[in-house]
Length: 275
Image 1 (cartoon, rainbow, N blue to C red):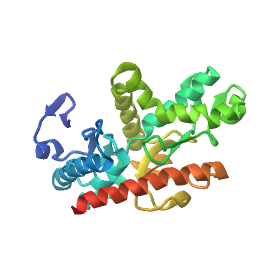
Image 2: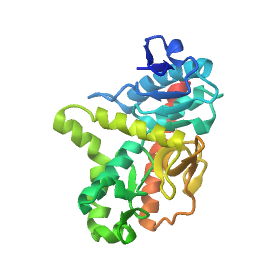
Image 3: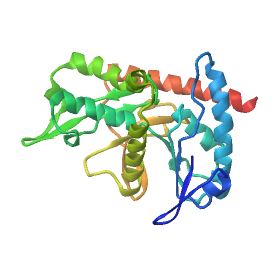
Image 4: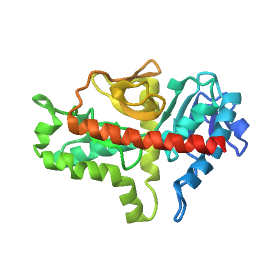
């Protein structure tokens, strides 16, 4: 599905990919091929390589030169990487994937646990892949209180929950929603996509960061050349990876595990590309 805003009150709905991409400044890619029962990972990847190769070509030829791209369809990180491969003129910093949904879920879980408004919780992190290997990290998260900022770990005061159930709930929330309602969390994803684009374009509040799947430059010893979710701040239409955060031994293992999965996905995608 593609929409192009020609004027404040005009939306063009089209099945012509060239028309959909013409002069767009923001492209939200929601189309992809989901894994179905009995399908091998390579079959799913092959389908998505075909889809994103075509989408990338259309953006390459028809979009505005400064187009910002957000990939939502799963496997989001690797779909974004495929798109980058086939749209070489689009700057790598302009191609991202959605992990804001996971980020928002993490904020919600902490807020519910503490019985505080979600708006008072900030600086959780989703590291890595938009999959069950992701690492929801609260080690640098804080809540705003009348007495000032307080570390989430201190406020929750339950490391067993934060290091166990909290992580599993965020990692598996999408599957739990599908099991409960037989449908995906489509509206939550749409809302999170709006959050992602809003902060990317308008900037993040001072002292706060958000999670975005971006092209790794090797920060935090993550392999370069994959689309990996990092904590970022945004200003003037650009994102910047937050640097200098301490990573403990347990967290290091989780960052590496989700990176390993993305490296495997990348290798599988390139195999499909070369066939």
